[in-house]
Length: 346
Image (cartoon, rainbow, N blue to C red):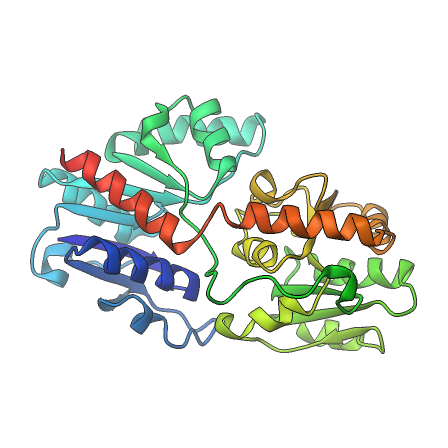
């Protein structure tokens, strides 16, 4: 048996797991921590297998929950106390652990050095394989933590190409920036709106989708050019991306950002903070502008740079985004996870 533990089980994770269940023919049970943050409808059904709701500090053994100790556990990180305890339980029984993490490389400062020491001393011996999101994870765990390359595999996250795909040429789309995500300080949404207002040009708009504690503040900034929308389920976002020229994400801290992959698959340009983890995978000179999220001036310059793109530059950008978007998918997730399990059981 394989047990997959995933916090909150968002739609993209459910679709990836569903693809793995479909292709692997394994006996799989999903343990999902419950949340009231967003109404994630239909996620359990997308996994194609049994889903059991648990608490992040659940005190039960994994054996008491699923009826046996699985030979493989796939754990969504080491932050949930219950997940990490179940990893140790499986390891004690002679099983294998695959630990998922979206932590990107953040430089070689003191805080990262302390994380490296903690990982080496407390976590590493319990982990057979690390399943990481993208190249940021390779830079962190192979290049900086010096783990053996075979122990670190990419492909953890992906949008679904059945939902997110190319639309008309960027030059033919409305002159529209979009943001999709939580309305909070970390996402830098208020600075995003202020920066856009400073440099906005006729015909351009900024459409903001999501929810969170800063919603009332954002609604006060709404205008003819800034449109504040509510939360939209992931399976309804495809047409929104395909009707925009550029996706914006100005986070102060972003582990990876599945929304960036969804934007790429939809052919959008990218205006990204240089703190977004998936920039290593998707942000190239042809299709993106990076900026410092701590500088509103730099944010505004990023908006201007996108608005000044020629039709030819937009054509090149769209082609590059689509090319990079094809590197990740539920099929890649399923294939890579199947390969990890096959190697561990060998």
